[in-house]
Length: 153
Image (tube, rainbow, N blue to C red):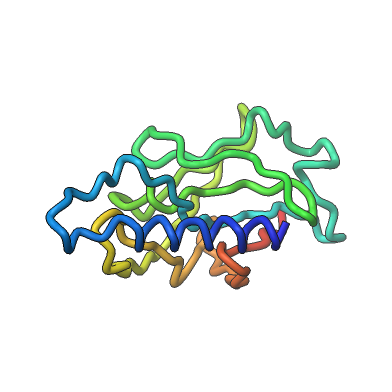
């Protein structure tokens, strides 16, 4: 998995530098596909069991929305299923609604930091500075490309 990420990053870097605009050509940003950093949320019980895998929550019902727009998906990782929040979609609002089931809804508040990449084809990169789940501050784990919080329910 790490080898694939490194290869993808190498292809991305080569693509960015190969579309330089110093010779009068227009940069075709639509032709560049790039990865967006995400926040991964793992839901666990007090014993460390993954709640998306043990049947507590149905992954098909779990969704995170910002201003009624879905900003999440369920992703498989080396450590099991997690909720992946696409940070580029959370720009306009810090508060997100976490729907876990038809009867259970939580609140996720993110304090984001944006930084410019300096390349004409890229949007700002967002990182999570602080994360609060139902008002409780979460510890942010910094992974190779993404960030992760583990919520104990």
